[in-house]
Amino acid sequence: MPPRHLKTAPGLPPQTLADTSDTVQIMLARISEGGEDAVRDYARTLDGWTDEIIVSDTQIEAATRSIDPALREAIAYAHDNIRRFAEAQRATALDIEIELRPGLVAGQRQIPLATAGCYVPGGRYAHIASALMTITTARAAGVEHVVACSPAKPGEGVPPAILYAMSLAGADRILALGGVQGVAAMAQGLFGSPPADILVGPGNQFVAEAKRQLFGPVGIDMFAGPTDSLILADATADPLTVAWDLVGQAEHGYNSPVWLVTDTEALAREVMSLIPTCIAELPDLNADQARTAWDALGEVILCDTREEMAATSDRIGPEHLHVQAADLDWWKGHLSAYGSLFLGENTTVAFGDKASGPNHVLPTSGAARYTGGLSVHKFLKTVTWQTVSEDALPTLAQATATISRAEGMEGHARTADIRLAKRTPPMKLAANDKG
Image (tube, rainbow, N blue to C red; front, side, top):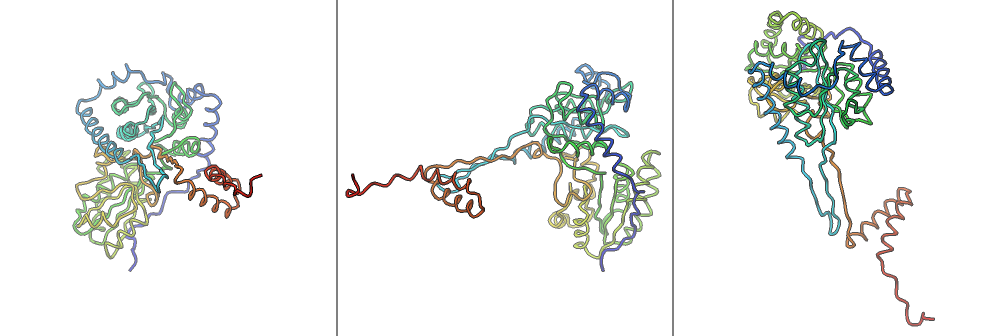
């Protein structure tokens, strides 16, 4: 029997993306023309921010002093995990050299980007962890200059905990800017920073659209949509834990899908009965977000076997994939489409969101079927080089000329011919040919 839905996702009301796209296009054009003055105007009108855009060392020091020591310690703990994991990733990105044939040598180099622009969201939640995930990873990759921005609140500026996290992670310059204007300022190199070679970090639909429109001349980490999460659970799973893990991810926002895929109907039914109770225990705003996400986008899918469960998960390609089932090694070996994998009941997705080490900037909307998340590799250029000796030249030139002429590219063939001709010694004249 094919997988069947015990709860389907009716979806959210249709929304128009054209308005977002048009708004962003107009804003980017105005900032391209007006530069810093246009950015300041948007900061004033959209965020109510009229103070300095560049955050000073004095402000960072004051923010650091104002933070509860327990929070500072937690941020330092998370930063250490994220840094160590990113540095371990960097150690796997190696320069290589290989002699393919005698005298034909090729290689690759890993070159860090010169400048990274890291966007740290503001809004409803203080995204402390996003500052750590983006800036720390760029630093571990060896990026020369890191600029970061985050929305400023009227009368307060960037929240102190975010400022501390940005500074601890190693940002060279911090801008009190959010939205399209923040992304554009980093891309254009406004307020004293070099233009960003890559823009990274999560954001709302306007930030995501700005990154999409800027992509090409500027690199981006990925085209990101709303965050999503899937749980694979069998009869060994605890229903209340599963329910809270689904609700915890639905809390991200009204448009965040969550899935439960299981081979145990009794578990599924109990989880569905517990979720409204869990949601009711959240603060009102969080509860509203989680309830809307669960009602409109939550799905519960019943399968017959674990193989069917794995295939269903791979077809969805979730951003976060949490396995709460027996035989974790089997699942790790058979699952192939996810942004980050969380193995075992102890390993809640929130650990990865905040502090465990692997990056939380991950592919959404099924993109995990073909790409991974943010890592040091996003901040590195893998470039290649090659050199040819006299010994390797004849065979290489002949092969190149032959292939080029078969393709109809005579100019390419001639560049090989001329090198072969220079190497071939002139023929000696026979005695009876002398004049």
